[in-house]
Length: 484
Image (cartoon, rainbow, N blue to C red; front, side, top):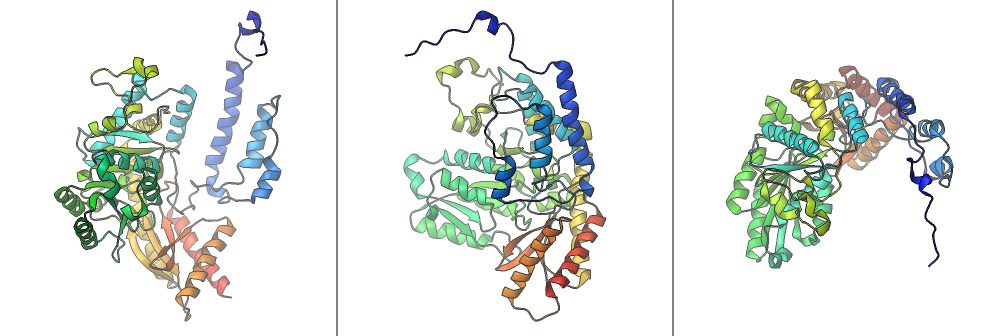
C-alpha cells in the first residue's frame, strides 16, 4: 500500500474556503431576487418550454470543473440554460395533471428548512422539528376527523405514502399467506398503487381492478363479486385501495359504504386522497369525502391542493402503533437514539432514515396564513371548476364528459360536424398539443371510456375567472383553426 502522508496540522486549522456572513447575504439576496421576480411575473410569463435531449446536451454537457467557476456564472447558467426549459406548474393557466402552486410562505419555510438542515429522523437530534411534525400530523387528523390515537408520517409524496401504507397493511398477513393475498384497486387508481404492489412482491394476478360506473366511482357490486369469487377459489382477499379524488376525473368513491363493507369482511381499506383531502375544509367537500375518517390508512399530498412546495406527502394510519411495528429497527450504530416514553423517532415510522424537516413549511404557512386562507383556496377551486363547466357548456362546441368532481372538469371539443369517435380523439389530442404550443396555457388529456378527454384541474390560488374565460375562448378558436 502506498504511503499517504498526513497533511500538516496547519492545513486543518481552518475550515475550507467558503463565503463569510457578508458574502452569504450578498449571494442570498441575488437568489431571493430571482425567486421574487420569477413568482411576481408568473402571470406574464409563457407557460414554459421543452427541448430535445440533443439540445439540452449542447447547452449543459461539460466535465465537472476542478476549479469553481464562481457563483455569478453558476447563477447565470441556471437562469439562461436551465430555467427556460421547464413548464411553470404554478402558472395561473397551468391546469394540467394535478399541479402545485405553493404559497410564498411555504417557499420561505422550505428555505428555512434547507438553511437549518435539521435531521428530522430521531427525537434525540431534533426534538423541536419532531414535535412540529407531530403537531402538523395532529392538525391533519383533526381536519379529517381521524382518531387521535392514529399516527402518521410526512413523506416525499403520495407514491411513497401509498407504498408505506401497503407495507404496513401487509404486516398483518402471515408470511405463508402472502402469496395468495389479493389487493382490490379501482380502475381509476393512481399508477403509484400498481408500482407499490410490484415493489412489495405482489404478482399481477394478485392485483384485482374493480370496475367503475358512469361516474368513474368504484362499483360496490363489482367489489363484492370479486371478493366472493376469490374466497371460493381459496384466495385471500386482503386490502382495498379507494380514491378520494382520482387523478383522471376527481372522482371520490363511496367511502362510507366501502368502510362498512371492508370492516365487515376484515379487509384493510386504504384511501388515496393525495389530491382531494383538503376538500374536507369546506362543507361541500366534507360531504363528498364522508367516510374518509373510517379508513385504515389515508394518503395526503400537501404539495397538491394545500399550497406547499415539492416535496410534501403524508400517510395517516388508524392503528398508529402499526407504523413502528412495521419499520422500527435498532442497529448497533443507532443504539443511542432509542426514544423515551412519549418520544417519537419518525425514522421508525417509514422507509427513510435520513429525513428533512418537511413539516416546517406546512407549520410555517398554516401559522402565518391561517386555516381560513386554505378554506378560501378550496372554495376557489370548486367555484372555478363550476365556472369552467358553465363556460364550456355555453360555448356550444364542447361536451362535458364528466361533470365537476371536486375541482376537476373533463370535457372534449365537439364541432358541429359528423366525426367518428376516432376522428374526435385525434382532433382533441391535436387541440391540447396546439394549446401548449401557444405557451399561453397548459391542459393535459386522458382517456375516459376510449374517448380522449381534456381536463381542467383547479388548485392554484393565482388562477382567476379571467384565466378560465381566456382558455375556453382560446380552445374554441384553436379548434376552429384545426378544422380549417
